Image (tube, rainbow, N blue to C red; front, side, top):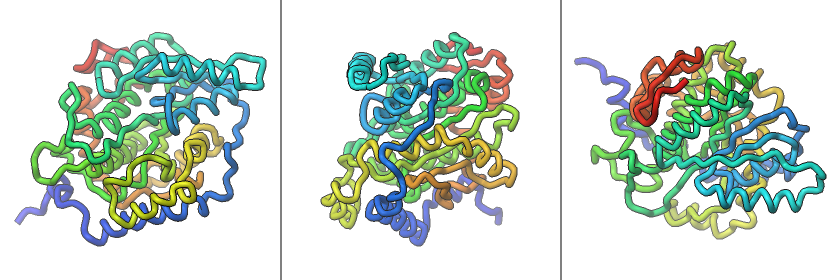
Length: 369
């Protein structure tokens, strides 16, 4: 009898032991993250960043707001990639009024709606046409529609999967020419410990087969696992000479309204929010560390040299950690990579073509250079 394929094995989901281990990671993070991260200062001290250009998605609220503000106040050129440009401009004015520096903050605003892959293509084309180098892309924007029924974008994809994985993956690939121009550069994906409690079926990333019951928790956690798996392959396929590092980041459990869809034991923990959960400034530290620490590219290069099955993953303690064992399955990761390219409308050779500056076609937009 033929052995089951990697895709068939993925459909079986996690074993009970893996599922329990995954939830133990989540519970530990919620209960002990402030103890584990007690060595960190808030805000995280940053070096002068005057020569750094950073794009930050979802930067008008929460963690993204703190990331954009602190990078800009340290001298970086920050591009706020947001759905609501009016809100972004209002924030910039507030930050400028509050800063002690006599110099204006170097911040631009560009519209980006991750629920539209066409918007991602338009954003990427507009930025690439500027011909400017990009040093850091921070894929921060994400959604967790607690307790809500399954929803689909106008592109036809489940909204968690599109906003948390598909759109950031497309954005990362289309901005490769600018990232190569800005090398050494970094792509940073703000992830979640919730990727430990799920699996990804490459044949059902849109959750339409009915083989597993959909919930917002399933949608969110699966999208975050897909993000790590895709990042693993991108990390491996990017040639070292491109100078582009791939990093996933765990920000920790921040103060958000997620209790309704979590197990009872975690709901008890959420009653202690002021004591155990990070605020946005605390939750921004690991991303800011990944974006600015000079040792990160060396660490990423060492992982590639050692043929480690995963890309760099930085925890809320600003230290390296291993993603889940499921995330390190290269067979499933390769299938997720292929399926993602198909879903976002790119060809299998797009990575090489984009790095070489050749014309690339995406079905959600025009020909790209």
